[in-house]
Amino acid sequence: MIPTITAFERSPDGGNGLARDMRVRWALEEVGQPYRARLLSFEAMKQPAHLALHPFGQIPTYEADGLALFESGAIVLHIAERHGGLLPGDAKARARAIAWMFAALDTVEPPIFERAIATVLERDAPWYAQRLQVLDDRIQQRLASLSRRLGRADWLDGPFSAGDLLMVTVLRRLNGSDMLDAYPNLAAYIARGQARPAYRRAFDAQRAAFNAAPKG
Amino acid sequence: MIPTITAFERSPDGGNGLARDMRVRWALEEVGQPYRARLLSFEAMKQPAHLALHPFGQIPTYEADGLALFESGAIVLHIAERHGGLLPGDAKARARAIAWMFAALDTVEPPIFERAIATVLERDAPWYAQRLQVLDDRIQQRLASLSRRLGRADWLDGPFSAGDLLMVTVLRRLNGSDMLDAYPNLAAYIARGQARPAYRRAFDAQRAAFNAAPKG
Image 1 (cartoon, one colour):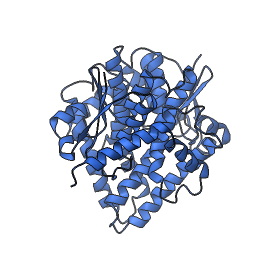
Image 2 (cartoon, each protein chain N blue to C red; image 1 turned 90 degrees about the horizontal axis):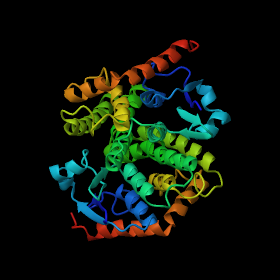
Image 3 (spheres, chains in turn purple, blue; image 1 turned 60 degrees about the horizontal axis):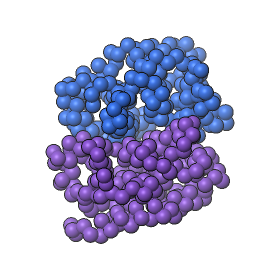
Image 4 (cartoon, rainbow over the protein chains, first blue to last red; image 1 turned 135 degrees about the vertical axis):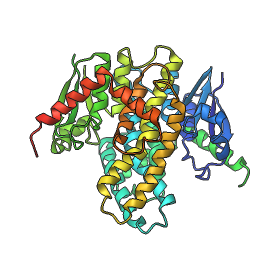
């Protein structure tokens, strides 16, 4: 059965693949699993039909074979557990790859996402410059640690895994800022992820959805 | 082999069980797995020996049988996968319980944790009152969604699971604020988690560690 995911009808990022359906699309492409995307307006996301699928009224969701899931991290893990290619076979290496999934979402993403929110919600606030400095310092701490651990390796722990997939989607939000300038190995890591054919297919699919959306 | 976890030698929360080792202690107590806690000073956490275990220089870590893990969510999942009692046996119910683990850490915790950071870092800033209002609004949104989904149930999806364990540890940070006043079912849910014998044992263990710490 072909899974159905949900995504924004008109992503606020302008089709740049920063919305969280991108992670799920990329994972599905890595394992060669076709899928359908059901696109939702912001209004539809707050309706009972969608809230039954996603208690917080967000995207993405995943439905297949009578199972309904929400949370991009959980969906990527579910896909990785059911198909080869995103988690190592060795039990210890598998547990470590899952640790990197949590590290991406719980340790690296929060300050990066807070910064993205601040640039929208607090741009005109008198404290904006100072707040940005606080957030940038927190992000730099994380980047320094991550860069030191990655070193000269291609991926975080052995072959490409779901941990790398999530980490690249998290770090991509810094593309175009100067925050990666001090960490050329992280910039190369992001580029390496984005160069994967499965990434390209996922990116093109979400961009096509954005381009086809009714103009607001 | 008895696993070893790391925790703060002197937790900044004063032994109130808000540090992230509490989640791991609680999970180990739920499944009846004895463990050792290795306590670290803030200085020791930044040394190469600990950075080899935890790339971001934090606690907790988990070591057993030649496996070393970091990230509290990943450690709890690893424990839940190896022992009965924290994840349902049915595959679909298991995937949904894991979705609640990610929801706790990725959707509910970020605004709650940001608020905790702000109360320390921004308390004296001229914008503090306004910032707090923005953060409180974000938290209230999450609480309203969670309360609606929980309804009159004891736990989020069937029997107590690792998803509930993480969610309770996340929500506990709001104890003593007035933010739970509008959601008596969430206050009761937290109390239900805290009343579990395994929770009590875990709480007492981290409190004992705090009380035994050298006074700073």
